[in-house]
Image (cartoon, rainbow, N blue to C red; front, side):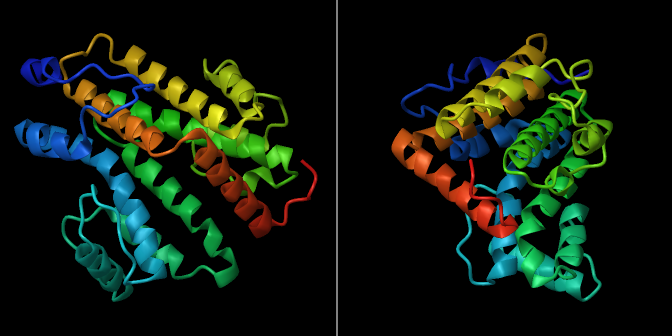
Amino acid sequence: MSKSYYCIVAGMPDISLDDSKQTYTIAQLKDEIYPQLSTHDKELIDLVLLQVDNRNLLALLGDKNAAIESGGLFSAESLLELIEATRQGDTVKGMPRYMMQFVEQYDTMQPDNLFKANDLLCGLYYEYAMHADNSFVASWFEFNLNLNNMMSALAARKYKMDVAQVVVGSTEVSELIRTSNARDFDLGNLLEYADAVVQIAAMDDLVEREHKIDKLKWKWMDEATVSDYFSVERIFVFLIQIQMIGRWMSLDKETGNEKFRQIIAQLRSEVKVPTEY
């Protein structure tokens, strides 16, 4: 049974995705809430923070002097030590195994395939996180894997790309997305949100589409924790939600559209997508 964190959760502010200002930050959570968690529950929260380390690891593999984001678990020095140790055939205690697996595979990639490195890292990360010994946390990462794969595959169809090349993971759902020609990848009976994702992917406004995806995630989290409100699961959700709010606060609609256009332009360049939309 999950440990009760009544006092912690009761003291957390009410937040929504459309908040115009951030009333709580990840730094506050790490300073005020994280020290009160059990060792096991800290490890669950760490799974979210590892997303920052993943981005930092990729950056440092490209440039050992790269500036890194704050808010992760590991310093630049620790990540560089992991890279060097992996290349020497050693391991670094306390570092996730999937990171070492990634460095090993990254070093075998041809230069013209390095644009696939992020997908490779995401696949290894999700596989690692889906083995969390907490059913809600494992389900959250599986939900995200499914959601990201569906969105990537639908974009690949639109731009006449090879769908199999953009799907990561080795789950039943991942395999269906790789191989099915159905509108919803034959997922209608497996995933209750499959049709909603197809509809969102068809939206032309890139920022609105991204916002709808975050609203779908928000709804999924709230519904999945309705009976575990004063638990580590709710703290886990709170962390993800304040991350979402922070991201949208830093991105107004005009700059958001430009950012997403740049992502699409880069993708089209890397895989030589036809010019027709």
